[in-house]
Image (spheres, rainbow, N blue to C red):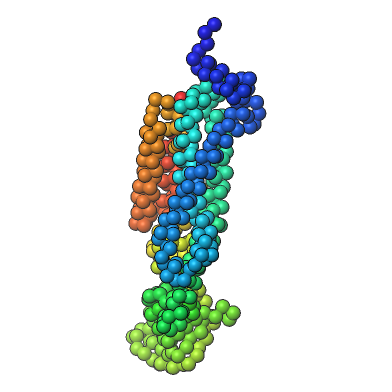
Length: 401
């Protein structure tokens, strides 16, 4: 009796891999021979692509930062410590790309070798065949959550602290006075809840002091009642208040704006001023440069202020949470193109997948713009591209034969 060509491929696969039966190999237990074979082939490629991608990102960061770090006095051990500190943030970026490439390569290889065709001919559905990939994908979702909410924020904050320490150490060896080391430009901060407006001509992260300070106390109609001017001020964390040096307290009539009194002082402590200088310095930084914890602090501040300036920070915050679904979206997009058939050039599947990722970023930018214009809630704007791509990937997956 002449066997069907697909059955012949089944038998050849079974003989080559010393399997008594493909159906038995696919159904012999929770983790069968084909599962182990698929995982072995895939995880090897995944690890290789992940290491290669992280390596390229390390090279890029060193290219961007190496000269600056060297100019600030970083040498051998310090440079490697900086790379080690920043490495977790590379992993969070590289994981979705590594999943895409590894799934496309591994499944394409198995498809061209007719191994998937043989398993399908043995009566095993795509859902069961791809089960190991989906399970690992769920694990990668948990890994993404852990990285984005815990490891990456710590990595970002520590790397920034290392850069600042090196910069401060380098500047302190020069002719700059302490108040000029690590000094930022003008800093403004509006505490609507406490009805206080702050302004610093400059703030030194090295001394943790502000210089050229002005604090205006407002009434319920946001009219100025008092203004505290000082040459220098800093937050005393033990006493939980601000200390002002060499200044003047001015009192105004809120109705007319007339200056009613002006009292000079040498030292003044304000226990009711509880504003955190670290929060003040975060306000004007780009959302992409902030960690998950820093974004959370800014969102709470802007929500209390009811300030629309906080929308980009909220979108970025919820996007980091929504990225948890990234591994599953990548897998759902990659599988249909990888198993499209042996006659389809693998480059076609890769190009289509990359095109879908480009579509994702276009949708993300459009949703972010709509949120900035207050046409969408930040959480909706962050989740919408992920949900849309999940639905699209699910449609492609459902069409698989």
